[in-house]
Image (tube, rainbow, N blue to C red):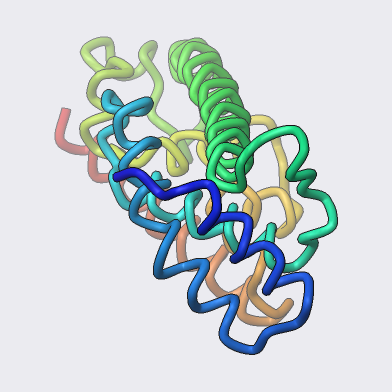
Length: 197
């Protein structure tokens, strides 16, 4: 969808002038063209809602600091495209690094399972048939497997587990309760896994 440069320039002028209708008009005129362009560039991205969210964030960021946009360098839509695309790239890299860390944790977890002889966690020495694939089946959520790895390391801080389970936004008491509930749930699944072997 093409948006004439004059329309974009007028929108920017109205935003800078403090026109109370300008923000909504920016969304009305530019959001869908921005999403269309990002969806094409990120056509392999399975989460369309994620692309939409970054488009919205880009427009919000512009409206909060319109002075950062220089009309002499590019059109407003091009500015928004580059901004959202850059944020998507950064987020993609961050998620890729997170996946790599979790994969490394899986390898370390497999070693820990193989070498562990405690009653709390399954052990290949005690249960030769128990493999990481069994643990993955019992704990399909990567966060749960990362939490098991932390337990095996002897980690006890609520903060560490809250970060793994993405509970850091909760108040302290709720965070502690949710961490304990998740730890108990994971331990129970591992005990059932071992007893089933």
